[in-house]
Image (cartoon, rainbow over all chains, first blue to last red; front, side):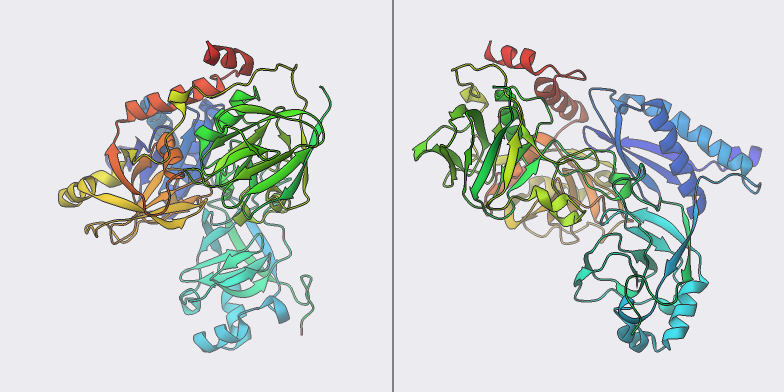
Length: 240
Length: 325
């Protein structure tokens, strides 16, 4: 315990403008940061359910927007930090044990064939790999959602194998079809709705990643794990 | 007059769209807030008509518009860029007017400012998506495109209150002068204090020009190059008003349809009232920045919300009476 106390990572809570706070956690481990931030925000939302109007998690921080007239959270920073420290203590205490993670694991079926793989020939060229090899490498990894943004439900996922890393396209595609699974730099992403995009599309999923009618419209949340599984044949498109 | 009325759009330019206050609670899923670019003008338009806070109004940006209504209804236009004309006769903006069934309402350009809001007594009844009628054209969600109005579109207008022959108007002292120079009040955040002192001094002394690169997502400003801003940060949540500094020292002020996250250096947040003024600036106008304390910014924001929204429990009638007294 003494060790934990001395090396307690620092949390901070500061204002960003009149109606937002930024909560930050300084730890080296992505997993811990994600877990702490997720539970911390949940704690703050439970404490002030009417006042917190929006929250945007990223790698080491959460931007929390609030309704100034319901509760001015800028004056509650001490209590917010206390909630964070309680969360941190919990995470530390249970680390290494079989704790229940709030994160989900998903298996997402992907069709890598035919028209689904829009950028197949470019990827084969640039990566100098056979298509089957590209697919095998892409399937081999477990990805972690590090952010949701850009467009509704678009999840940025870390964990792309080294050999598949390449820069974004210099000219974005005007309309990337819904469900497209794409890669760029160190990340993999799925386009939940048709939108412009500069990532290289290697397949398509029929899974609905964003649906306004669900209580949680976005399927993927920050911290979730994703494995892709190969779906032969179709996801609305027949292989050519 | 309890029945719904219906407007019919005879002519409309691109980007004319419906907006309520915005979509909240979904930024975690990457859905941005939307809502009126000029909250102040939008709020007055609904407020004068006695519409509840969060009523839907039409945001008009680029081109003139013409419409008719099938039964008598009061309307109001607040904001810049356009004024209402009824059957060829100009009416004042920032003032309610009666449009009789079958009369022609045109919004004609040539006024100072960039965009305005058309509100109808009873509010426009449009489909809500994720709890809001706000239109965010870039999100391309099913149903979202209905919020962009097209020629021939019809929109239902909610039931109106009891008839009174009097117009209501925004007291002249409250009507903004969109041609006047704009000072953007902003609250610095932690990214500002991490900058070298020379960079901060250069920014504080600088004046900027509003560029043509302004849309519902962001407004770019141009000024002398200022060095010392980091190339980028790990992407973080951003909001309406966030000032992101591009590496050369050019500020980008995020507006209502901002992506939920941004990776440029964040130095602070422009107040909501100053965002309202910024979006009415023509390209080429000059703006400067004035640092605000958090106290002042919160005071200004809560006064605005209390006035228009009426605190936590909103009572529109009590508010309108208070204004006229």
